[in-house]
Image (tube, rainbow, N blue to C red; front, top):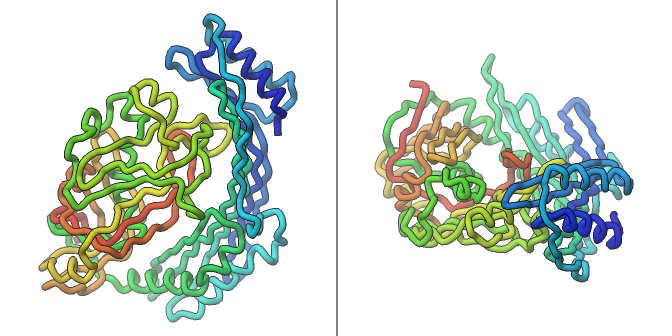
Length: 458
């Protein structure tokens, strides 16, 4: 990693040329991805990269450049190119404070210490467990391991290192009946090393993916319409991540293009809704010790009992909007500048039970799993595909259905949530936006939206 002296000189040069703010972001990353089926290793990738990104602010305008050449000549050429684009008077800066170092625990089994055979052992166990199930004709398991060391310093005196270790097993099971093939998936992951697989039941995860595939295989086509929608705990939280979460990021707030602009302190959801983003949860897939600007992560209560309390804020858009950073600035790697992004986002537990929610729903649909979809942060309009779903008849789950689409508006469904259960679960996934693909958690207890548009294939 760059020495403190080198970083001091980079920041001095930027300040002398008039930057209001300057930052050095340095990254060293090892990432390994292996994909296997019951027949073979389909893919095995090992990547190591390192690089530096330099970011300057001048009059609330961002200037950013990066390089994977860590020679002094290349780095100072980068600074020179940026400061030529940004003209200004000489500015003072704070000296670097003592470096804060955030490390993983001593028990962490990091990526580079494992042989290929050791790394893929959990994946092979998952494949075997899935293939033991009736009607499962194929298993595909992708194992992702990442170890990332970042160093962040800026003209406000921040000087930190953060070591981040992630591992995840993405399990897909395929069930077949004649020519019809359907899939189910499950993807446990954590901010831990390979010791994580001694803490979870890999075989049970594979059987869950297989069970979902078989349910969908035998499901009937869904008949759409307006109806109550009960969304199961866990990754059902992706609905609120996409439909509401992106609209609460300062990237859109600072532009005035979010449906939630100017509503701090106002009622934006029903009384039973509390929405949280928390990047500080120990060991979680979407967690970080510090964000990609060096700000410690924290629990950000976005909506509390229906009242809008805060946004997710990065440094630059915080300046533009007059908001304080919340430890939410994230980037995929040094090639991206950081913007406000979600970490672990979830609906907090309520006081109902899942059984009470279902039994009090005369007719509707139960959504156990959401695949993904699209949302417009400026309007909150969304469209999501759901996989495993069941009709609710007379307060009970009935036949499974497929081809389900959830259509609506984030602000509208927040107000339409009328029951929240106590069975909270947080699940793991990825989010794709302007600063790249990021590890995120999404979760919730079972919730009910009293009325939503459900699209079907009948």
